[in-house]
Length: 499
Image (cartoon, rainbow, N blue to C red; front, top):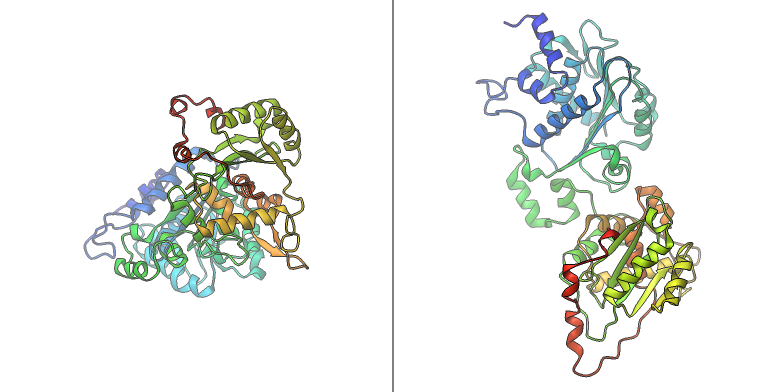
């Protein structure tokens, strides 16, 4: 039988090896145990444990200088074993980090009691260090050092936010686990973030992605650069009810919000104030090249960045097809050199030969449009904040172009199949003013909310700045429009620097 001294020594060896600790600490596949028949954790759990170890080693906490927070966000369908992994993480941190302090919360007290804490009790009984700790209805703590070496369960009511304040654990690990994180109030998130300023802090959030707004959704959107994220499909987990999942698939469909949230671990497409719903965008992306007639003009659109981390975007549409022609991106930093930007645009004009170009003329876009017109290119200035053609229905030009784009999608438009474009289009919200005119969220407001500027979506809007007359094409020459790509340009592309 292993001595307590040897056991403590082993815990130190597993400080930066969560997976190794989990394999060591529990009776995997031991006859008569609850883990009989299981060789180890599920694949998705193994993946997180391995990466957690990598993050621990990367920071190299010495017990003196604080290190950056380790932050994991996991969105999933139902029944994958989130509570089991939560229990493993709790027991790993407590066993390998003396005097660590943690807080675990869920959306309701009932969730904490019947699922999170009940699962922890089961894994504690199987854990090789389980006898070191005492589990009560609201905490788990070291038997000898209960005040300084503990984890508390707290309900996430907003008025309870003070309980999530700084854990003050400078020489060990302060940490939080949020279960069913979609329902945790923003105030709780804010207080918890403020409590991770010393020691070797960690933050784990798990949940079904029931809301496409809020702090949990932000982990996968505007704050994704701060989190290590995973989206787990229930169909890939060992313990899920595959027959029930198949029934849901048959009844609701692969891309329904019901199936996205409950099985695929993907955030819902629809939102109460969402201007363009995700289903419309999904359909437009999955279509082949859209239909067009031989006399449909080729329309070009240029959204000009103001510098910084925004992008300049160039794209095209012919009839219902906004997919076949290549689109271009150039960083805002590069667009500050207006002569370089004009030079790139002239190459795009010469390659694609659009019939008309709608250019965002706000700010530096105005002089760029002037120079292009001097060079003989068919450029029309558009101001997003300018007057709409129909001022009785739209607050400004943005709303009018956006609505034309939305209706074009519904009518069968085809757009590039790209996750960033999907996110930008579906993120914009709408309202109505006191004259019942459509108002779309301003670009700056969208960027503040989602963490990135919707430059590509705005470029799509520009394609609908105004109606463009049909082209006059000589009889017998109609077929060339359908095969307009110049083969010589496929072998050499001077525009790659735009990407």
